[in-house]
Every structure is written in C-alpha cells, then in structure tokens.
Length: 116
Image 1: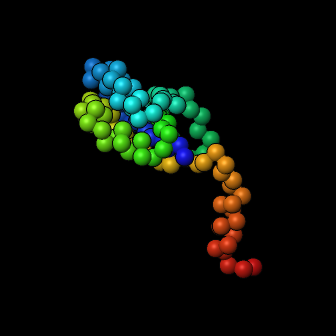
Image 2: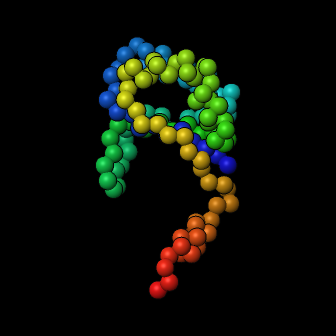
Image 3: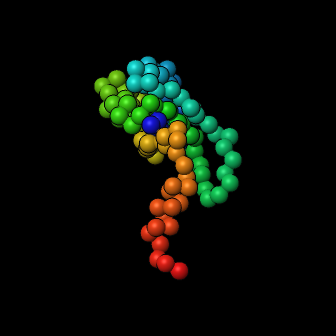
C-alpha cells in the first residue's frame, strides 16, 4: 500500500541552506523508492477552510519505506537545512490499496450508528 509524506510549509525564509536542501533531498529518498508528487506548490485552489503556505508531497511504496527515509542518516543530516529556515507541518501517512472501496468504509460507519 502506498504511503506519503505531506508537508505544509509556512514562514519560508529563503536562504542558501534551502537551496542546498533542495539540491540534496532527492538523493535521500530515491533509495527508499520515494519520488516527488508535489513540490513547493503555491497555486492551490482553496475550496473549503483555510490553507496557507507551500505544499510538498513525496510518495513511497509503503509506510515502512517512508519511515526509513525520514529516520535515515542521509535525511537527518540535511533536515536542519530546512528546519532552520522554514516552519512546517509534516505527516507520514498510509495511502489506500488499489482495490480500496469507500462503500466498505461507509458500511462500517453505518454499523456503529444507533438504529433509527
């Protein structure tokens, strides 16, 4: 099942370390099967609620690979280059299997509801 790293970047202060981070990050996640799906997107259309900042999304074959990348010495070495200059909200999250059926989720929800 695929997994994703999703980052919402706030208060970006451009700095040479940010450029270095961007130059080096791909080499840290490629060994884990990662690839950029969204990188620094600022043209999002907010349809509900509020959203600010840039978006980054990296896809991985599974959550184990995403965690292994995040915890890897290669990524941990460059992470401060980003975190010193960008405030971020970052999550690692499982995706859904190719055969995912939302109707099954709806059935589980209905089963927990009181009878009408």
